[in-house]
Length: 109
Image (cartoon, rainbow, N blue to C red; front, side):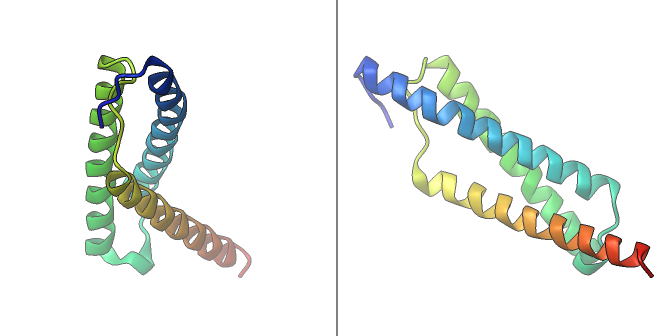
């Protein structure tokens, strides 16, 4: 997306910058969980695949952040690109919640 209106560029940068930072935050938390814990219900292959998807998404978000910064907010991110990131974050949240619930349940036994 290219935008030649400075006011629109400011709005885009104001909205997109924190959104991309949020994606990076949640992907990093998910990456740490997936790299440091054994998540039984995912299985080894499932955990590895999810970790690879998170790493790929982190790289994609980094590229988007670089482009946004390099163009001073003149470049945006299509919704079609954002939605898979959102879906992946949601999937990671669900895995983290289930993992923590199972850990909590094991501690109470």
